[in-house]
Image 1 (cartoon, rainbow, N blue to C red):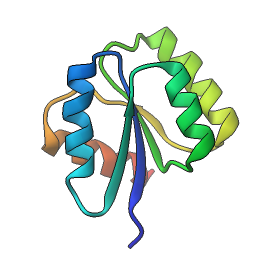
Image 2: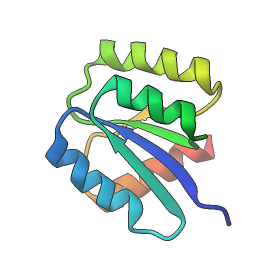
Image 3: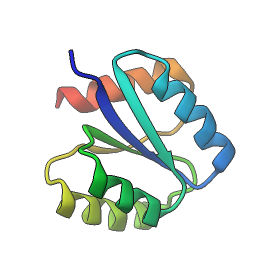
Image 4: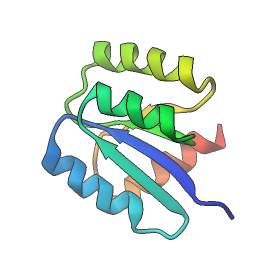
Length: 100
């Protein structure tokens, strides 16, 4: 099975460091974490992602605007909110988003 490419975007560098570790722990996933919209758009232009996580510090309005920009670049990629809660919840959120 090919590894999933997941982009996680959040505003808190410390939280994003933890999410980066969680995303890259399983062998079947590759995670990229960023803290700015500009970094997210740059990463999205270089890599085909299977899923985007909007994490801590992104308001609903910011998330909607960023999602629209990302979907223009890669239509159909799932963009979901990640509210924290550890690796078990993160794994379940990823599975649920990709099952849709």
